[in-house]
Length: 398
Image 1 (cartoon, helix red, strand yellow):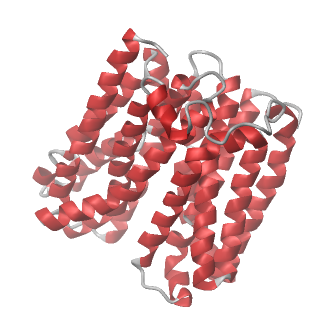
Image 2 (cartoon, helix red, strand yellow):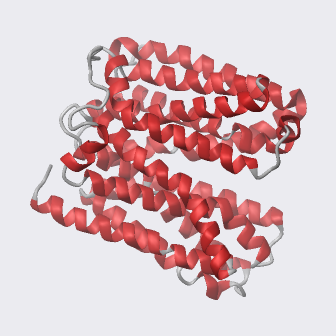
């Protein structure tokens, strides 16, 4: 690849890696109607399977900076995608035990992707463009999820759900080979003796670097709200707002699309303002401002409610790139992978707990819309943490 050492090539490669890793995460959730009977489990088992993926991702993220430091970001990305491919094969051929182990492998690979990408992009990105670059890279997540939803059902009908999973594994293996083209440029500075837990000792890096713990907390709070929205928005619209499942599904897709473009918009704004923490604070406030009045909108016409919910998607799912850019900015010299991994290990805890927390709130209040209004406490708390961190880093820059 002629320009494998350039930022554009790196951004394309890391975005594609992120998208394919996300595609693998959605293999079983999307193929559930075809696969669960063969696996001998009930539909609710998918919730446990997704939790297993993100628990594995959180655990690997805590040491991912050290692993990528030893292997190099290109090799680390290859391992991440290859783990996803192996996970897809196990899901297809290994029965229920294979599905469990395959899910853990997919999660472990997913936990490597962002630290590896961060190590590359932090070296190449010019000053003043970090947020935009990370925002573009994070568009791989919603695009990977959308691609899984568009491609996998038809593929399962054509060649069976096992064939669909194996086809995805082949694509991931092809990407593994393609990433080898970047090894001479990306991995030249790798250190085979790099400590797994890095300067400050893994998660203790969050305490050692001013502002980094705040970014991790913001990620956990915002991801919990985002995942709860993704898990229960369609159910709320059907059960309480009287929408048809098809129309509610279209709105859910619109939330994904607006969230994807929000990652670019808010990243651009963070670069313009020269403050990711300011933008993160604003996003928390705007998310809460849409969630809080939801119980009052159950009688609204669809034409009025849909734009409001798209605004919610724009804010509640658009923060990720800014958060990762901020983690990279606050990292110690040469420690971008360690910082990103430490932040994500906490963020993934929010991913795991968000839907469960929402279910507990719903059980207490008996209304999805009211439960979302209560859940607004999470983005409000995140906004407060972001603003406080911004004020502190203004006084004591990293």
